[in-house]
Image (cartoon, rainbow, N blue to C red; front, side, top):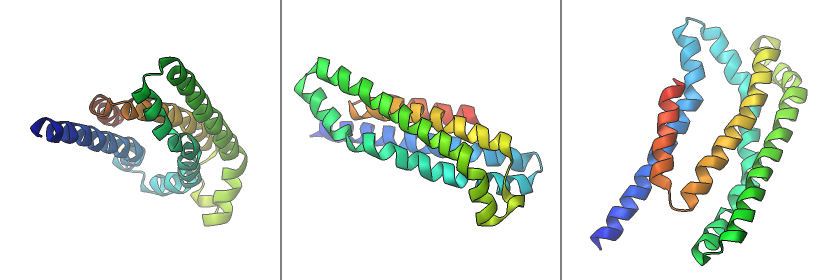
Length: 168
């Protein structure tokens, strides 16, 4: 009984630390701009990144829905099928992230200008960086969620929290 409660606590602590790591990563850009005394750019970055944030989350849904099947393959000890599924999942995460990046580059400037006005668009450089970030975050998501589903939540939580702290 005590061992089960301990394991549950450790797994939950790993997920909690990972959540804080992602929050730190997401907030750090705005914090840096605010610390540099550029509050107007914080608002522009927030508006410019809104479509990217939503689309990145949506692009993770197909593979995230398959994580339960991945856990099942792992529990069954089918290492070959598990490895094949992992490769496919990472490829799909990255393919969808590439599609999101293309939409961000092609659509986001007009979307932000139409939505909140041209003064709230952070510029083409920021937009291109958001597109690249979509791919990097999707790869980071794949690297984090897959091992956590396979029982490495604490390790991934610590690594993600450390990434968040370093991102500041």
